[in-house]
Length: 77
Image (cartoon, rainbow, N blue to C red):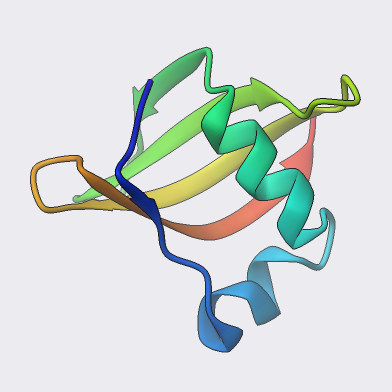
């Protein structure tokens, strides 16, 4: 999957980086293998691996018809 922009700022990364680094989250989103609907409207569950092979699950909001993605939280699977 390709996104034009991954939105990372102090507000969303404060929560998202509790279990994975910002770099790992960005790598996993770039390497996304699977994207599923999340129970919260407008959010998706992205499953992917970092460049180092760590498998992450990331809850993210899609914006601009999927061109931009904003990570909300992430954890290792």
